[in-house]
Amino acid sequence: MKTAYELALERLNKSAPSVKLTDRQKQELAELDKKYAAKIAEREIALNAEIARAADDVEKEEWVREQLVTEPRKLQAELEEKKERVRQSVKSEDGE
Image (cartoon, rainbow, N blue to C red; front, side):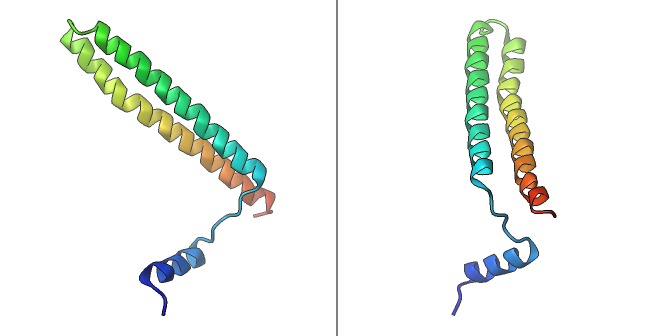
């Protein structure tokens, strides 16, 4: 008897079969992850330093804190778009 999890995976694979990635595409995805992890960390460090400098200016500190939330989200969204392009290249290489 199959578990609910196994049944759900079967249904998912029928509606949207998983895509097999090539070694090159896996490497591209890993490189994108590394690159964007570094970009996000770099922005967080820069924004935290800016927060420290803006300690006397409440409005500026608040604005920078908002940036500390929004910029990593934007970078993460950008990363996901690029990763999706890499994944889609698998389909185009297969002739789909």
